[in-house]
Length: 555
Image 1 (tube, rainbow, N blue to C red):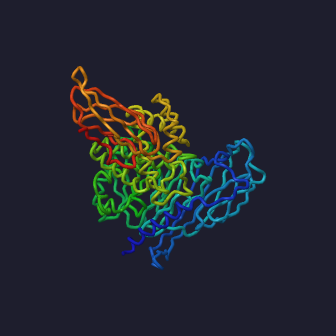
Image 2 (image 1 turned 90 degrees about the horizontal axis):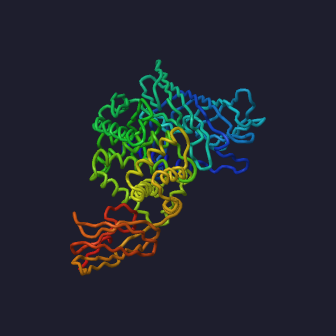
Image 3 (image 1 turned 120 degrees about the horizontal axis):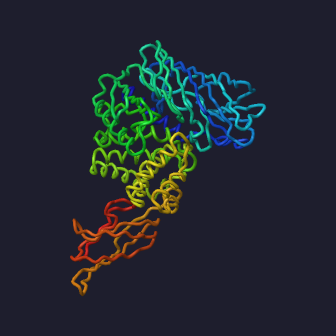
């Protein structure tokens, strides 16, 4: 196994561990909530000294033998939004970074450090509506600061506010970041590049964002493209860019689709960086970190297919809308980010590549969720936060089931109402934090339907239907027509409307019926010709435990 292959495995293991264990367990005494304080802006200046990557295998585990160095200063503009004075503000900064000083303009502040938690204490307490700038100086050796690749994300690049849920909604502010890197090193961050003098480059996020990241490498070179009306800056390693034009085109097509569906792309520049990352890609505001194997055409198995590569680029581009402009908050916030990005990407596949590609990728979501459906790992979507999100099982719930839940909502309220609900929700929540309940309220308003039952079942609970045609028979009427009655049974849990198709081809008749969990419903149709076949959920809109028992032949 080569060093980059070992590095890829190490990145997967370490980032997964970070996700599982983040945020750390925090003391409850005096614990604030994010509604008490928000960050309105960040001015970040960092100097990085990458080193060559060195690894060793010890007892089956990979260890990093080398680490680069980072020195940084972050000015954070805080605002007290609580109705009472606030004396303590909790921030997150990687435990690999040492806090050298914390200063507050015109105020007295001290800090204590426990792991990655930095607790600021103000004496006297900050008054309601007070605005306070805090400057944090720090340095250390965070992971992923190498000549081969750099990946510094939120909390490892600059300090941010942290909540018990682990969401970033309190950090919605404009970010200016200045990076000093060695000569010839390509370092990339979010937003518009506003200056480049010698080895110092500065970016501005253009709009309020919940976080930014830094990525790049010594061998990366920039390629300029324009796609979807957006300037693309693509950073790749020479000789490993076989799919560059394809991926650039897919990104542009996805951005154009989102612009029509939601609102115009909110940034003037979009960075795409070829990198060793987890799960194919990571999406930051106006910056996509894409698996280097997607660029070289060496993804494993069937993942080099065009529809999956399109889905990958569309998913990460969707993150420039959510969670970058609509910032998920509270219960179910992980689904509001990843589940929505996944289904928006599937809709882009459908619009650009057609129904067959859409059906292929949707079936992949079904297959992915089926691995854990009905098992102990099949937890409710609402139960996941960054404190327990990361293992493969949780991703099957958030990505697989999460996208299928939105597909079912599209079925329940109709395609037009679903699209208008998405547009209205993202337009109304642009530039602020939003909760799952807000999306439900918008969908109810647009569709005119009550949807609490749907969100309760599919977000708060764990249900798993299985629809079968228990019986079906046809009799001839006195008028010479044929009356067919079918009994539809749900052998699983959860109550949903379901389509029932009588017959096949152009003469097929479809009726919709609601079938309760562990219950059944009867539906009857009258047709001019005899019905030979009845099928439940012919469009495969619904989550089921078994999709192979949906047809019934009338003999």
